[in-house]
Length: 367
Image (cartoon, rainbow, N blue to C red; front, side, top):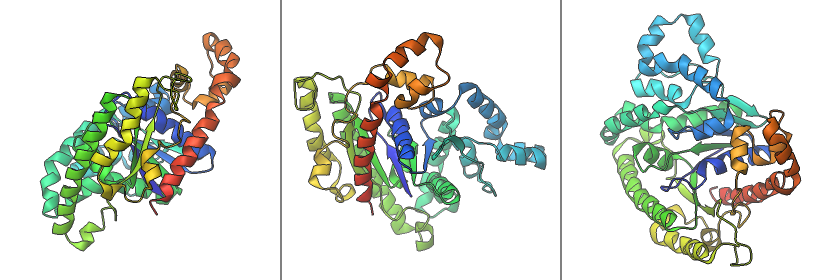
């Protein structure tokens, strides 16, 4: 099992759309995948489930998020067991460590999206857990058990679900922030990849990630040196490793450049490998060949704009290639979608499959 995050300090690069489609194509290829939404905006959750069901889920959790222990004491055993037998959000799952109380005896089931694909939904309240990490961070240097439990609990939850349901991959969606929540997530997953646009902002996003990774590694290495071997075992064996970058959802200009990008965009794209070499430390990318560092994951397979296709995918809660076959197509969309099914929608499956195969080649370097 591998825990992977998609991350860029620059927003609007299609990170959530790529995470959603990568998860779906891996499921299509026979891999068992769990998506965890740790972006406070909850876009991955909205892609995967009905908003009314999400609102109902949040409502049932509200009092627990407000005060878990007090609500638990007022809840009958039967009502609590019923609650735990339903899918719960990632913040609900993190709440015992946030409040310093006992963890769950039984894990709530993840939401079954389809065969081989499940979701642990997000919550807008996840900032509360982030505040608790910040409050307890200094305690980790002294080996405080609750501080270490708080820092490692996201990974622990991913591992527990994987052991229980035999997941091959856990795909974690994050916000663009370089705050302490993402410091904990990115530093304790197995690998991460950077979706980027061919522009100046993504260049600086990669630089910021690289500089932050250097600082984060120093902090985690210091914690490891100060705590006991037993407590060190709660952390992953290796610090996170870089899997590469991909240029995603860029506008296509056929024939202008090698990658069918406008000249200005192509020039920025060609600067990405140098930016990676200059700012992403070699110790988190030494497992990659120079070709893997220089070439985008999947080449040009998902590089170019899908126009409005991702909007349709989000609307109908399925990947682009499945939209034409959705039983929920509205009358105003049906004729246009079906008319473009074989021209635009269905062919995207092979493109994402090419991307996934390239992704799996990078995953193999982690072993």
